[in-house]
Image (tube, rainbow, N blue to C red; front, side, top):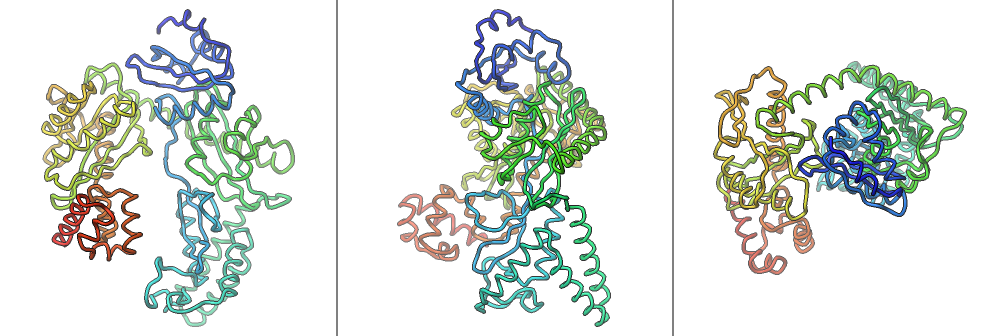
Amino acid sequence: MRDFSQKLKRVPELPGSYQMKNQDGNIIYVGKAKNLKRRLKSYFTRSVTGKTAMLVEEIADFEYIVTNTELESLLLEITLIKKYNPKYNILLKDDKSYPYIELTDEKYPRLRVIRNVNRKRRKAHLFGPYPNVSAARKTVHMLNRIYPLRKCDPLKKDYCLYYHIHECLGYCKKEIEEEVLSKMKEEIISFFKGDSEKVITTLKEEMQKASEALHFEKAKELKEMIEDIEITLRKQKIDLNRKESFDLIAYSQKENYLAIVLFFVRDGLLFGRHQELIRTMDDIEEDLFQFLIQFYEKNSLIPKEILVPEGIDTSLLENYLKVRVRVPQKGVLKQLFTMAEENAKMVLKEEASKVEQDEVRKEKALKELATLLHLSTVSRMESFDNSHLFGTYYVGGMVVYQDFQPLRSEYRKYKIDRSCKDDLEAMREVLYRRYYKVLMENLRKPDLIILDGGIAQMKVCEEVLTSFHLKIPFIGLKKDEKHRTSAIINQNYEEIELSNKSDLFLYLAKIQEEVHRYAITYHRTIKQKGNLASLLELAPGIGEVRRKELLKQFGSLKRIKQASLEELQTVLGKELGKNFKQYLNELEEGD
């Protein structure tokens, strides 16, 4: 570890954000502080353990940026974490947001499960979040059976199956009275607020009819639905004085691990919980802040109130999240907080040893990989693969891993020029575009590039990196006759055999499977949709803005396909219109 005593003397006692760097100049940790001098000094003058000790051992330099306020330092910290994704900052295990159930605000409403909720854009009724997506889908399925809401999107031209089985009122051909729709909406909203009486009564009536008609299987299914509702609502009920909506956060910490539990309470009902186990950096408040901000940026529909443990700067969190933040002091809320704390202790007890074993295995595999490749360290890895439809319409995929943990928010899809006719050209285009952007936008470079292919793809990668004067290590993964990973090919094009029982083999195989899945899913989606909308995503020069312009001009995908060259050129211009028309003709020939 370097001696930073002279540099620390020049650090001011002011708020700001600091960035720790390794010997390659990569930012490995970003933090904030009310007093930069005191915070930075603490890393090098006190005894540290666990994750903090690992960080300190890797620090080759540090930088800092002074801010006027602590809120500014928090905003800067989050901006830098998003940009560099440092290896020692909090990394949530799953990038997916929790689903909600939406009762749409349309003339003929629909009930559906959605993600990526934006409060500003939605006027619909939203219920959730639902940590258990299968429970959300089950609930939607049940209510759609009971209430004959609209099922089709867009509306069909004639009655569909749902109409004939009495699960739709025939919105495509009938004008339904507002009173009927309002009654259904009111009962559904009441159900989500804990009043299940009308729903259960309806189910019991259906069960009785099924039983009398000797449809015993249907009667049994309805009975199980009633039991599910009663059990769920019994578990959800909390003895609050009013139907409050809030999130409650509690934690438990032991040694190098921090267990965090969130309870989601909506209208006095406990909708579910989220739990996370992370390795701590010896600063509980800092870790909680980073966790909560990441969590709520994924799940954008934040409640109006958040309850947090003592020791958290509530005003700073309020200013950032723009909601009320307070510490529960007494009564039922304090009891609920104690229950959440007990949950966090259980998570810590049950999960810590398992997570620690997994991290030890990953650290061992990373060191083995670095040793085999004669590198000082390997943390961030970017892996590439491409896919095509019968030798045409190539697409590429990039997945990103940090310490063998996937960073799904950084995965990227690549729409490849339609003139591309082989895998090597496709790989050249993807690699060129990726590392051109890395250079132009000063993005973090990976410690290692992993290619899901052999020597030919590696030579393409070498050409691209050389053209940019980039020195990034890269490897290829060789497969055996059974199409399984068998060896690493290093930059000298030498094969390094891997034992299929080693942790390194298993982690590399996972990356290889993931990048292949990610690239091929794009085409599978296109084939499953089977329409021009999905294939338009591959059209050269046609991005989201131009797709919208085409739809605005022609009204439908069918009319776009039928448009003449001159009509297309009025929207796209002469050259792009010509290329796009040629692309559409090729699609027709492919059909």
